[in-house]
Amino acid sequence: MKNQKSLNHRRHDEDNLPQSTAYSPKPHKPWNWLRPLEYVMREQRIVFILVGMLLATVFFVWQPDFVSPDHGAYAIASSSAHLRNPIVVYRPSSRHLGSAAALDLKVPLGLNRIPKRVVVTGGAGFVGSHLVDRLIERGDSVIVVDNFFTGRKENVMHHFGNPRFELIRHDVVEPILLEVDQIYHLACPASPVHYKFNPVKTIKTNVVGTLNMLGLAKRVGARFLLTSTSEVYGDPLEHPQREEYWGNVNPIGVRSCYDEGKRTAETLTMDYHRGASVEVRIARIFNTYGPRMCIDDGRVVSNFVAQVRT
Ligand SMILES: NC(=O)c1ccc[n+]([C@@H]2O[C@H](COP(=O)([O-])OP(=O)(O)OC[C@H]3O[C@@H](n4cnc5c(N)ncnc54)[C@H](O)[C@@H]3O)[C@@H](O)[C@H]2O)c1
Image 1 (cartoon, rainbow, N blue to C red):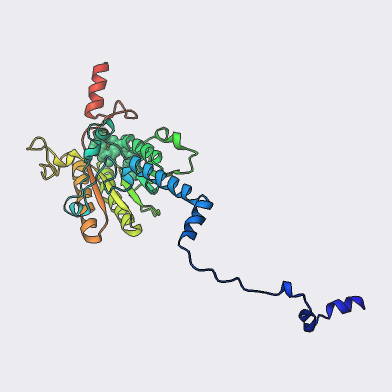
Image 2: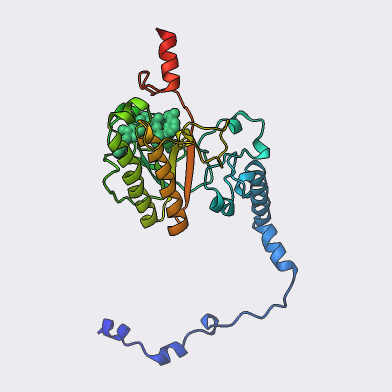
């Protein structure tokens, strides 16, 4: 009975409540301009604001690249300039001139950049494996596509186990679909010994392989870089060769599979740029040497070193 009584709550019970517990609105205070300031001072907010401003100032003074459109030592030519000439221009910015890093032409290590998904064809080869090292170092996720014709697993083995690295055994003559932001297309035997070994395969790699990778770039909207060669100038009549020089190439010689193959690869690259708006770069590499290069691959520098040693 007692319980039942407590459940039967009636409105007139509230009317009997003492006057002190009834709701009474706060009296309206007149607006005082000093009140926010008093609040800020009382809660020590001003200290936090000043410390924040100080940290931001120190950060932007030390990291001017964050606000500058000119990213570090590599000022890549403006997009309108690229439309005219997509050949990569390494232009050390004046701020970095004189520093050793500015003269050391490497893929820039950007602290303020979003990591990219990158595919490197021929990434197990000499140049490709060094490029992969640099891309991994700057925080990108890298997929190497290589058929190991001249490349070696040992060149990239130190990245095995890294979740940002993948290796695919694949011939670029066959199409492949990968979701990436950038394509570095290096796959092609580069030394005369290797590219003359199977000339038809060499030109197929340069033409069909490049077509496949450009098709991929168009499909997924990736930026594309072709590693071309100074051999596109053939037997040049001009020294040194400027980028505007068109060369003097024998189309039916034993080296033509490589020279003409690369020239066609450049043509395809430019046609995809003009016709399909693919963002492209062409790097004409001259004789390069260094670690992971085979001493007996028949190239000029390795030949020279081999002859010195014998
Ligand atoms: N090293 C130089 O001095 C030099 C000079 C001019 C141009 N290049 C260009 O740079 C690029 C790399 O040259 P490199 O010196 O590192 O040569 P490399 O022979 O060491 O590397 C080429 C890589 O491509 C791979 N490959 C070849 N055909 C392939 C195919 N069909 N499918 C998939 N992978 C294939 C090879 O297995 C190898 O890993 C080449 O495109 C070359 O033409 C190099």
